Image 1 (cartoon, rainbow over the protein chains, first blue to last red):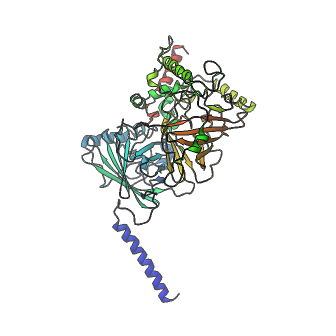
Image 2 (image 1 turned 45 degrees about the vertical axis):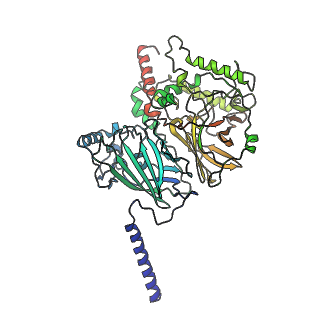
Image 3 (image 1 turned 90 degrees about the horizontal axis):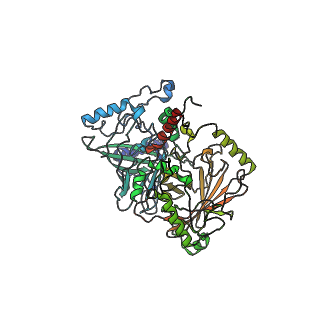
Length: 276
Length: 327
């Protein structure tokens, strides 16, 4: 290979690396991507598809080390993986008495975590549970569906004029709007019985979540959730994480109708004895 | 709307669900006008050119699946408006009647939304007698074996003895028999239709891209659906049914074909055909019109399992009866 060709290739590679680093460094988390992504006929980013987080936030949204799981017989197959956490600034700003409650929750999570009972997981937890979810987006003013594999939890994101929540719900009430290329979903009317993770992080019925879905390219969405709950936290705080597209051609949500997996734990003691 | 909001909030719904099977229904007539009307109605299109089925729809009707063998609906395909109205009134009155002595009773008519009757006397369009066709000998044997197996246990020895409705696992792919909340919202995106059922917040995913199904041994409660357009009609074929999700004796080999056709701004002509030759001596077809919900808010979160006090109640009640020797 001639010297000039080598020089060209090396130079080109260096330039490409510089360009990648620069775009990565210059782009803040929620800024729209300079990598092209597809758009709907109305010009909005096309968020349709099956998405999943790839982190350990469902174990603990805060940074945590690996530890032994709760069922010794399952050994390494069901122990807790470490994670850097998804809370911006590191720790959740709990009020002192709320922090004590969180710690109590953590101690009894196997009994008290609503996930164990297959209860609807609420927002934002549904997003980063280890199950995919699907966004079904049409053009405005049609509603957007966000539907999760876990427990078939589903939310209708009402587009157009915001509508007042008629009643509290496990998955809350979602009003959506576009801010440039970001889908902003305002979530209110959440019940106080869901948690953020298996580490007992929790909220009250005063929870207000503002989610931001910003495409960073065809297969990545930057997800942010601003958490406001004056009964539990001293100030609002934010979690953020990328969501990745399931790019398999045949990707589809399968059923995880987990009610029947929770019944022995919930109702087994009420079965006729001796058991058949 | 008020009572609906109340119903959505708790375990009450479970008890309501349990009474679905015993309610007596009435009705009216509407002959299948789908195809004719559709020819005249210019079906709106989505921005990418598919027929537009989006919106919230209600399928609630007091018309029974099968034409009753006795009573006012027996022996005829249709009834008049007056007959429908009088049946409706009888129906409401019956819902408000006090329970028999010793029966704790259930909710009165206020708590139910059974819907209006059609002018047809059955949802079954074909066969013309409005009845589910006879079971094949193979199916009779299978169903008899299931009955015999079930008879080895009491009605509520375990949670697993109760039906999936009561357990809040599923209301199935059609929800026929529910006394309330037969609402769906249809969502569309390029290459996809999703039908979200209010009952148990169950979505039915219908890819339109011609992809393969999944292996036949992998069942899903709502089956695995694939769809395509035939003119303005969405045709959905569904397989891979969970055996415990059987509808009217259907086997996991059921191939369900559904057809959704917009016939006006506010109407979808919805039909399905049950093809399960190992179970029925012939295919059968049901028509269940979908009417646009015009209220501002109609779809609620149906958090059934989360408020399911019926399950511990039924099981604890059965244990108590055993203790007292009353069962």
